[in-house]
Structures are given as structure tokens and as C-alpha cells.
Image (cartoon, rainbow, N blue to C red; front, top):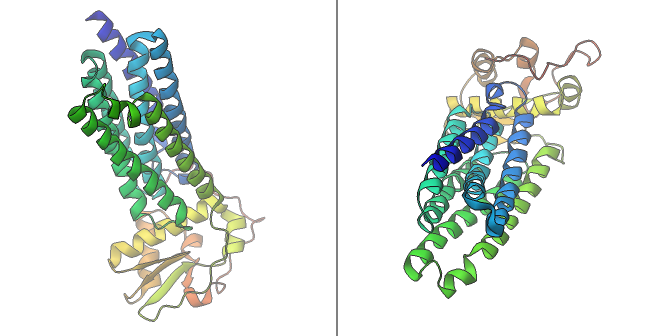
Length: 322
């Protein structure tokens, strides 16, 4: 009993430290920085879980198994937090849910013998993997293929995890079928492929879109985009520009559910679109007047001038936002 409580305390400390190190910054400027931070820690957790399992198989004891299971559940859970941050949403609920999953995993692994704890752990992994796939499917980030890669990788691993439990329960956890496709070695290989796919997608997201946006053609509505892209990027930075586009698209969908996402803005059929979107971005997302002034018709993206990048300092990544 004392050993189980000690293991649980260690797991609580590890999970809390990982999640809450950056939690107070969620929702503040620097969405790309937070995305990269959580995505990197997700990768570290995934690799660390394999290391813990190797230690357990070499006689590391129950502590290594508990930490490995906690890290394995945290890996997709932290990726979910990263995707929520990148989408411009507050991710506090996702972070708290991730901590809860980690704690449940620690309790089950420390108190339930194998293979029961294995079945619970694998089922818990399917939850954040499925959520990651859903968030990636709803993303309108350009280019699209990195999010589609994250969607495919997480959906595939969620299906694999569900099949792993189904085969274990139906055929037996020590059956030849389970050993062939779902034991430690094939599961580690499947996890490595997912890590590689997500890593490639994260790097591509960090690089941003390669091609310049072309003027939008909107026969059914009006395109509202962030204008003067080159000059604005010099003043605000690429990270802030991506955040502004995401917030503009979110504001457009809040007014018009049928609004269509464009590479640098949104197409909507509502009247006075620029004025209404500007008011919402100022009131809800805390845009300054010079940022609101960047909103232009998609057919005239260079119509509004921005103060010279030398005459003003870029917004600090740590400044507070509403």
C-alpha cells in the first residue's frame, strides 16, 4: 500500500509539472510558441514512455511501468493541448483533462495487475488520440496537409489501440495473434511511426505557408482579409500574423456559420463585414486600432498602409490579451 501511494505521488508530481509549467500562459499571445512547446513535450513524453518500458522489461519494477504508462497517455493529451492553442482557443480544459487522464492511469497501473492495467491504459490512450484527430479535422490552417497528417496518424493509432484491446480480450493477451501484432515490439513500432508523422507535421506548421495568397474571388459574398501582408509581417512578425488570421476566421464564423475560410481571412455574406468583424476583433480578441485597420476587401489587399516597422516596436509575446 505504501509503495502504491509513493508511486502515485511521483506520478502526480510528474504530470502536474509537465502540464502546469506553461499553463498560466495559455490564451496569451504567442500561440505558435505554445503550440511548439506542447508538441515538443508531447514528443518527449512519447519517447520517454518507451524508455520506461525498456527499463521495466529489464527489471525496473512497478515505478518504471507507472511512469511509462503516464507518459504514454500524456503524449497524445499534450498534443491535443497544442492543437487547441494553435486553433486560438483557450486550452485550460484540455490541459486539466490531460492531467486527469494521467492520474487515472497512474492509479490503475499502480493498483491493478497486468493485463488489466494494460487494457485500461490502452483504452485511455484512444481518447486523446481521437480528440486530436477531431481537432485536426476541423482545422483550416494553411497548408492543409500537416493537419491531415496529424489527423491520419492519430486516427490510425486510436484504431490500433482499440484493436489491441479487442484482440487481447478475445484471443488472449499471450496469444500468438496478440504477440504478432500488438505486443511491446509492434506497439513500439506503431508509436514510433506516429511520432515521426506528427513531428514532420509540426515542423511544417512552424514553417508556415510557402506560397503567397492570391486575390480571393467571392461570387457569393465578400472577402475580408489581413492586408499589407509583407509590411505587416515586418512590423508584427509571422507568428502574430498567423494568430490574427486565425482570430479573423473565428470571428467570421461567429457571425456567419456559412463563412468560408480563405488563406488570409474569411469570406462572408453579411453586410458591413469589415466594420462588424473589426468591432468583434477589438472587443473579443483585443485588437489594437492599427491592427483593425489592416482589415481590407480581399480584392484590394494593399489598400491600407501600416506604420513603418522601424517606427514602432512589435508587440511583446508576453503582453496580456483579453
